[in-house]
Image 1 (cartoon, rainbow, N blue to C red):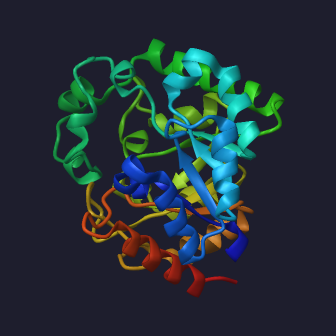
Image 2: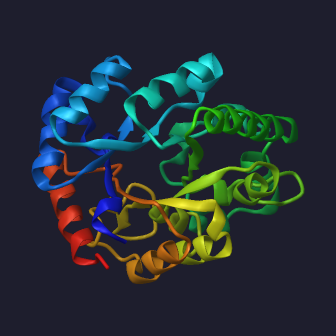
Length: 283
C-alpha cells in the first residue's frame, strides 16, 4: 500500500456533504488525502464536480453509482464519470428486494444479520429467508456483465462493492451469492474487508483466493464481527497486515477508507485517524 493509492469514500462524511459538500472536500484535502471515492454527484453536473475536485487538488479515481442509475441510463453514467476523470465505477449494493425468492426481506432486516445469527437457524429457516431466486440472481449478474462492457468501452473499469450478505445468501443449490457472482459475471470486486468478516469469511483469504478479481479494498475496521460495529481503520480487530499483504500481492489499485457509522459528533476525526493509521502502514 502506497500513499498515492489511498482514498476516502465520501459517504463517510455524508452528514457534512448533505449541507456543504465543498466543506467536506476541503476537510479531506486538509487531512492530506489526494483521492476521494464519490458517493453521488451531490446535485452537481459532471463538469462542476470535476472543477470542485480540482479546486482542492483532489482526484476521484473511483465512484459509487447506484444499480438503479445504470438501469435508467448506463451510457449517461459512463459519460458523467469519464468527464470527472474516474477510473472505476462501482455498484455499491444490489436491489436487495428483487433478489430473494421470498420477496419479504429488505435492507431493514440486515441490522442484526451475521454469520453467527445464520448459524443458529435451521435449514428450513435459511431456505425460507435467505434463498436467492434463480431467475433474479441470473438477471442481476447478466445486468452487471452488460454494464461492465459499457463501462469498459468508455475507457473505465466496472466493479461491485460487497457487504456481508453476498457471503451469507444462497442460491437454491447452496452456492453463496458471492461465489455465484464470481462464476457468472466478469465482475471485479471492491472488497470491503469488514463486511467480508461479518459474512464469516477471512478477508485476506477472500483476496488470496481470487487475486485477479480484487482490485480495490475498503479500509473499514471493526470492534467485533457484527453489523453496525465498524470503527476507524487501524482501531479495531481486523488483521490488517495480512489483508494488506494479500491486496498488495493482488496488485490492488486503491485502498479506500470508509465508515458506515462514523462519529456523529466529529466524522472528520475518524477520517483523520484512519488516514494517520494508513500512512503508518505505507510500504
